[in-house]
Image (cartoon, rainbow, N blue to C red; front, side, top):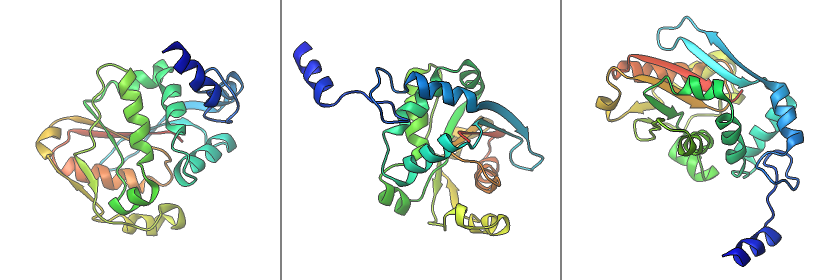
Length: 214
């Protein structure tokens, strides 16, 4: 086993998930320093009928923007471990997430999942849940049933109507009177969270809040 691991380390050395340079850990000290500089972990209160609080972890800085875009659109799924490990090592983030009964990664459509090969939010939060106790992540409650246009290409008004009837709740009994936390990567106008929250509240959730990477 020693020689197998030794050979793996030679031919497939560990690299930083942010800068792709050789590193003993998933995030090298230099990138960890930069991420800590951009970390904010701020809460925002939203006066909507369906969700009240949104927390984001980072400012949408160049390093975060670049890596999230590469993660989502450049077939760089391996970034999920670095993103998850950063969350795991932050007590404030862990404490916030542990307050909720069920964590739901915002779903993507079957077509988008087939094109990309993965749901970027699901990979991160599942990795997080592997290493943090008492976290329940569910991917069989909320589904995206309509392949909508990318939200980033639309204005605020168009984003709202683009997502109408795009999500569906199944197994509603699992969320009855439960506190739900939605997990997603980027928060812009809040249209996605609002639409998902509306469906979850309609199905019986007592409270819905969200946390995003940026």
